Length: 204
Image (tube, rainbow, N blue to C red; front, side):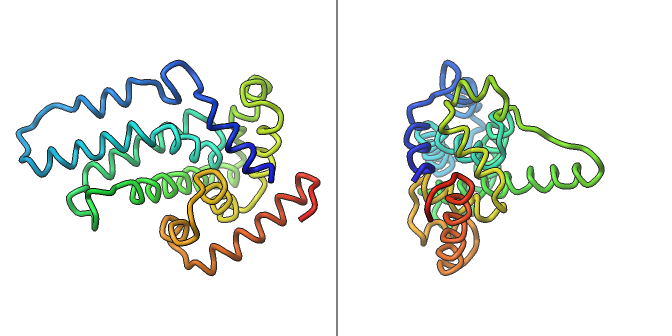
C-alpha cells in the first residue's frame, strides 16, 4: 500500500535543520518560566515536555497529511500543545496526554479545513505550498502522489487513513481520536482505501 510506504519514507525526512518546526518551539516549551506552581504542576509540565520532544515531529507530519502545508501543520500542533498545557490538570489521565494532544491536533486540522471551505465559497482558493514543484522535490514524487490522492478524499476518510497508516494506531485509538465508533472507523477506512487505490491506479 503506497500510503504505508510513503509514511515509512516520511519518517526519514526531518525537514529543515532542527526538525520540522525547528528547536525553538521545543526550547520554548521546555523553558517556560517558573510561576511557583506546586510539585504536581511541575510533574505535569515534565510529562508534557517529554511528549513534545518525542512526538512533535510525528504530530506535525500527521497534520501535514491533513492540511497540506508545513507552516499550518506546525501552528496546529503548537496550538494543540498549548491548549492541553492549559488544562492538563483536568485530563482524565494527566500522565498520558498524548491521546488528548492527537485529538486536539485533529480538531485543529478540521478547523483549518472549515475555514478554507468558507473562503472557497466566497471565491477564494487556497493551494497549500506542499503541492508546489519545490515541495515535490523535497518530498519525492512517490509521496507527492499519495499526498495529492489523500487531498482529494473526504475529510473523515483522510483522517482515518493518516491515523491508521501513518501513526499506525489501532482501531480503538483511532475511534477515540476521531470521536466515532470502532465500526465507523472500520467502514470509513475500507471506503477510503478503495477510493485511494482507485485514484492511485491500484487494485483495491
